[in-house]
Length: 297
Image (cartoon, rainbow, N blue to C red):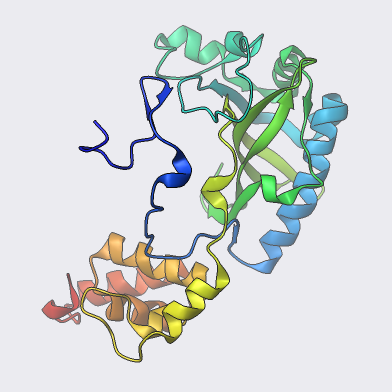
């Protein structure tokens, strides 16, 4: 089997070869632990999450003021994802299973509706049923953040912030180590503070933090300085010289528009790397037939 799949590490729950002996995949862009659309959302998200997880661990009732009558909370328990072999396997999921809205498991409309908690009262009930937790906020390397602005959340034209957090925590009195993913949509509240419009929590077996360990800086620098000419099928020097988050925007625009890399870069540069504006420029140019056919892949 390993001859057919040389990078296979686990089969049917059994480790078939040492992960350290498997060659790491070569990714087109450097791995970054965090992504922030701009410094403003970075500051908002950083301050918010520090307080949020502190209260979530110590006193969840203090968080209810961050939810209004339209706020939603849901929990998804995903027990089948691969688990790190470096920690003991927990014996179960406790009360979390009874609250889980995993749509691959919960198939009836009534059950799905009943497990979507709306408003502070319902969310408080869910929070009280969940086991105690500990998030190690003093170890930022255990967490990965993606933060960007979103629009049209509750009404056309309104704006908020999307926060996607991945990390680990200790669950319950047994302090089982687990991983989690949490998606929070924040919007301005009536007094100007940020409130939670949507809160989606996934808990899963502990998987470690290798997924967001950043690429060695020297590797990226070598890529940038390796050649002054584009390599066939490679990344042009103009793109290599960009910041990693800008490289990601170029790649996303290429995927969405099918533009070649140099034209996607040109479009983003004209929009000052504002992605929605770049898409608008592309659509306008496409509608006016001003994009040459050879600009597309």
